[in-house]
Image (tube, rainbow, N blue to C red; front, side, top):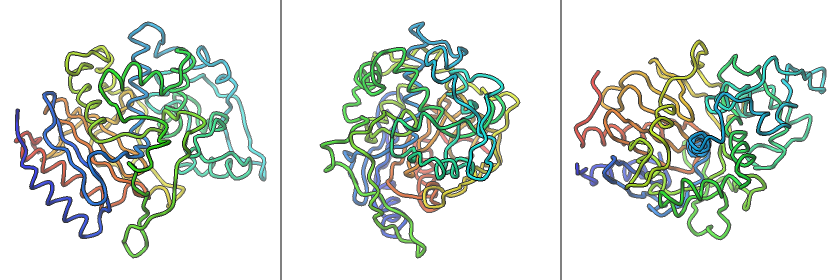
Length: 386
């Protein structure tokens, strides 16, 4: 198996911690055969349990596709076929004073649209209409992982726009409705358990000693503890952002995707379902040039790379080479807590950098993650061409 000089990566992250870019984190690089690099740095270890936020989405997508493989869910079925109450959701067009202006959607969202974020759902930290809706209705933040998140209105008609939001939370509800289990129970039985992901969970109760404090980037550039804690146990298993994991566990999930749905002789998903995750699905719907933040404490503006991109199911897709790094066709995504991962099937490589810091898309953390990725490809000799 290809070996990586871990000393170079250790030095990279050690320097980043000294310079204040990171407080603590962990990183992994792997191929289908095994782990090439895995370590914690700063205040974290490889055994640290991270709040991985939207990195949960790819795993929830896998749970849905597991049900598709079993013939129990159809991607093109309307969501209300599995959850009748879903058909009662309305679209938020604006406000009359402080009164929300709501109307019925022109079409009903499908399961597929939940998985590629064209279902019409949004997030308050990225949508001003939802900011006001939370204010005037008193609906808790989605980070409360409260069942009230399922009452939030759509912000677009399904099938018209790509907008990042609680779509995958609803996908998790489809899993629960069809299986009769909680999302965590279903993932535990069919994904986490078979893959040996023994630390991944929606409930970190009793695991406080394995967590590191959440940090926020201050105006002076330092990272300081912000006191943010997620509810444990949560009222709802948030398929869009509520799980905890380690780099080793998430590495096994990524390696399963590299293996076309199989790892160490255990098949989780059909090759066809994995292929769907990596197949562009947006058609004429364009991704935004910038994902604009409406809450600078949680998220910075996220600019898009000037390269062709799309969305598969549960994964963002880069459709061109990133020179010196990932290849065209790579699937990736991230988590609000400045966690990042990629799965490059062309190179047979995957990797992740996990931290616990806000706001999302922190420039120093992103630059460190990119430096890690470039170092991995250089060490393996599999970098994408210009």
